[in-house]
Length: 289
Image (cartoon, rainbow, N blue to C red):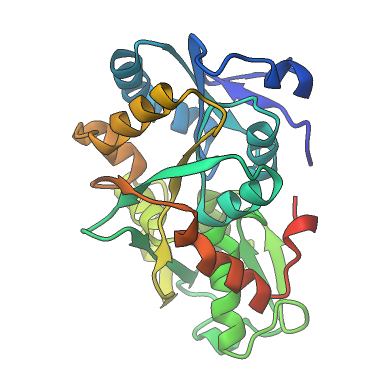
C-alpha cells in the first residue's frame, strides 16, 4: 500500500523524490508541500483548498503545493520520507505517522463549537434491515480507510463496547473514504457504516447524499480533532511562521473547508487516547499500513 500515486493540484502524478533526495532538502525550502487528508474526493479537496494555498503563500512568502494522496498509508509514508512538509492528519493516521516518523510535530488542532474534539456516527439505510446496533450482527458493515479515526478506529471500539466484535460478529468492509461509506449505505451496498459526524453533515449540506435515505443509529464519545503536523527538521523560524499562520487563521472560507471555527495549539500527548483505543482493539500500530 506504499508507493501509491499522488494527486497534485488536482491531477494524478507520481512524486519523483526518493527517500534520500527527500531528506536532502533544505530546512527552509522555497516551496512547501501541504498534504490534505484524503477523506473525501481528491478533486473536491483540492478545489476547496485553493484559498488556503493563496493564504499560506502570502503569509509564509513561499510557493505552496497542495497534495492529496490516494489513501492514508500513502500520506503517512510521504511524511515519513520527507516528501511533504506540512500534513493535515486524522487523529489515528497521525498516531500511525508518528510511530513511523518520530520527528514530526503536531502544532495545531481544529476547534469545532468551541471544542478541540469531534464525533463519529454510525448510520444505516433508512428502510434497511439494521434498525438498532444489535441488528449489525452477522451483516457487512462499512468503514472508511483502515487508518481512519472516525470511520474505523473509534466506531469499531464503540461497537465492541456494545458487544459487537469485528473479528467475529460482523464483516468489516473498508470503502476508503467517509463519503464512500455514506453513499454505500444510502445505496444499500452495506446496510450500515461509520463516518465523521462533521463530514456527514457537510455531505448533507452539499446534497451529496440524501438524508431521507439514511438514519443515525449512534454517536460516539468525543475524539481529539484532526492535527496539523509539520516536519521537525524544518528551521525554527519557519516552524514558528507556519504555526503562527494557522493559529492566526481567521478567513471563514478557509476554515469552512476544514470544517472548523479556528485552530488552537496542540501536542503529541493529546493523542494518547487513540493509542489506548488501539490497544483495546488489539491493533498493532507497527503492522498497520
